[in-house]
Image (cartoon, rainbow, N blue to C red; front, side, top):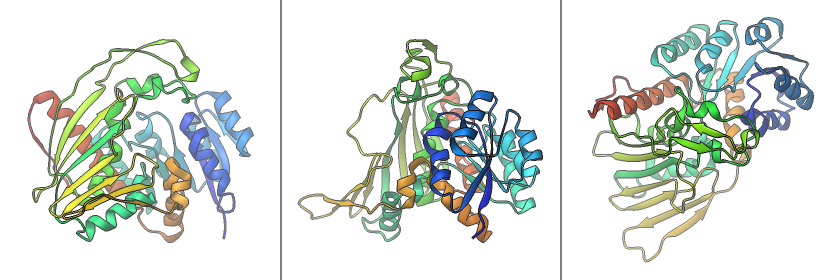
Length: 355
């Protein structure tokens, strides 16, 4: 099997923590040809530690001068769309971290360009590939707990600024074009739309609860950050057929014992684990106790955040659309932008497109 030649744009925390180790672990399938970052030292560090042939500070030069088949776009969110467009225009398959873009016009351009050029564009996150959520999907589709009328879901944590293990400067997460809405709610929204189809209507609230954060992330420990985006956003998603989901997203959840999701059906209930967990809870009408299941780990589970990488590579080889396809990523972005509109206007917002 010929190895697929890859380049990485964006050599920050997520690259070093997840994607570069995943590429290294799949060395029989991929070759890391080039790395790129606006910070030359980071690009060179990634090149040296993971054996790439060259490093760049300009993505356009990397696309033009390197023999690449695919590009991973792992930068902060605002450049995702423009960098992915440039890579597609250069004839490269693209895997882009979430979100695929921060506006619908750019997302539409990405969808059209990938289809026009017959290139595989895959959009993170890839949580639906994890074994626990694959099992949840089987149970939901089989009607194991009957008609699911509502779901409670979390897309929340303490925020990267207060995560000791975060190794880059997390300031951009708290600026326009990012925030917990794009960073965290994208996970439950992606899973829910895989399970129930497109969102029909959205209503939401939004607010800034903690306007200043003293950061504990390694690169900026002790510095005070002024938060410029809302940090707490509860929303209700209407999937039609009397199926609703309440999704709470925030950078102010310092700890929780709640499951990531709980599904309430006409014949029982299901719970899904926190991200990367393996414990499912199942309760059927008449049961005295919850059944607790543990799923067997797969390659996707072992790669965690980078689970979408081997799936994308398989899709490149087979010429097929990934589960986390550009049209799905575009719909998720439309949902998140509708959340912003609803919170700003106080109105229910109807979605214009489906999957």
